[in-house]
Amino acid sequence: MTESNESEDFGAEPVPPRAMERMHGWRRLRSMRTAIQLLIAVAIVSLLGSVIPQRSAAPSKVAQFIEEHRFWGEVFDRLGLFQVFTSWWFLALAGFLLFVTGACLIPRTRAALSHARRIKQAPERGRLPDLRFTTEVESELSSDETVTEARRVLGRRRWRSSPVNGANQWIAERGHSRETGSVLFHWSFFLVALAAALTITTKFEGSAVVVEKTSWVEGGRVNFDEYSEGAFARWINPHAGFTVAVEDFDVAYGDDGMPKSYTSRVKILDDGREVLEDEVRVNKPVSYKGVKLYQLGYGWAPVVRVTDGSTVVYDGPLVLGMRGPNGSSAGVIKLPSTASGSVGLELSLFPDFKLVPFRATNPDDPRAREPGALDLISTGDFGERPLVVVTEYRGDLGLDKPQNVYELDKTGLEQVAQKFATFPANANEKLGTSTQLGGGLNVELIDLRRFTVFSVKRDSYGTPVAAAAAAVMMLSLYPALYAYRRRLWFEVVEGGTEGVVLRFGGVAYQRKDIFEEEFLRIETDLTDALRGAGSVAKKATR
Image (tube, rainbow, N blue to C red; front, side, top):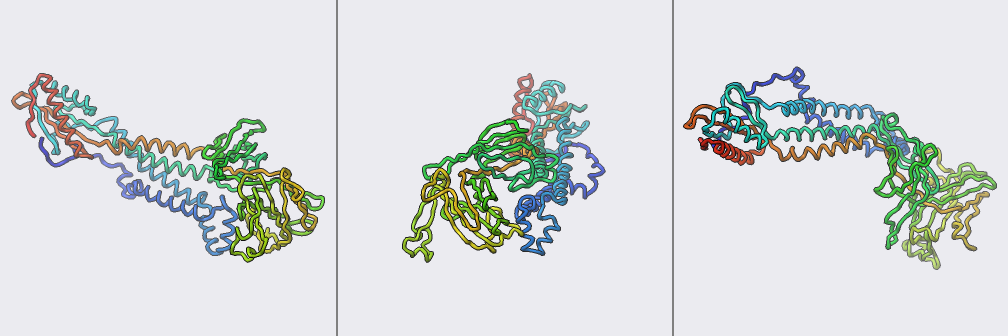
């Protein structure tokens, strides 16, 4: 076997480029480099959308940002940075990314399919190219028999052979699966971009707080505590409109008193008819009509009734959405129009209360030195010994500006009273279920319940496409990484001491060190096969 300069040209005539491909700008536009640059641009813009508050997810934060940063708030608003994922320029950027990626892949895919259907044919009476590896084998067989036997050996080794030309020359190829794998890998990249575009533009997601023994309707933005949707979600992924009834909520605790699992037992009703009963757990969502409910969190929601004289001004569950001191949870009731003026009530629940010396919780507070000073703590979250502290505030509730529904803006408020109460199952002579406040207000505790927080999502198109992209990517990795393209050039000529000479040479376009060993094995197989067919073969050159 001899070595010579490597050549990839087997005598084929160059194909003139298509009209569009003669344009330098078009070639650059449909290059993978341009697609990667656009992908980086989309990633940067998406990062901005996750850092800057968005109107679809947190309108109150957007209003607060604009109020605190007048100039930049107006600039961001004009640029659409408060609604990045639904802005026309972001959708145009994502669409352009898909167009460029497709323009890059379609010609390459067409070429790969064309090559897979037909193999390159040796030119008529061409000469053996200047290849790295060449060798000769002399045969007693006729030219046609030698060609047939050599092609049989190649077929057994899974080489594809071109038709034989009039000069008994042909080409054999193997390793085209590498190009197929590479094309599939890049198509998976296109599918990832498509999945991201579909997810951004067609999905909706939000969170919903639902109290035990109550229900929630999946029916639109107003029913969510937090909500965001893509630009086309309302047309492509409309709300299903079913009802989720939370029958029960259960928390399982470990030996250390920490929660180890929590479960919402729900019923799904569609048009008033029960269609599903299931449990929503962490990492075990419930799905119906393409909408998925994930278990996100939980907390306490005591049922409270507030009366102003003989008028009921609040009656229902109160979600305690704030973490208070010493293991407590807190929620607020805002009453702007009672008979005695604006009132804010803050209810702090200690699920398992205990009185401890004040110095145990606040050692640096001056009150810690007072003899007999006590403080409230909760020793757990079981709800076995609950105590509610009701704090009354009067003044300006600040309802003319954005604020958290779970908090009181105490800037214009004054604390006027603080009372204690518990629930019917725990009431006694010293601690009752209701407490009287100023101005004829009365707060009564009816029941202690839990609330559950669901993350609600619907992504009917982006998720399946992303799954398809992952499957295509995994299928493409092996041939793209381990297969390698190589080509052999054969000719059978008259001459030599035995009458016929089989000449052949080869070249590999990747993994050339492995091809050298493969070429030697092919040479050995051909020699053995020709000898077995009745010829005397020997290496003419080495």
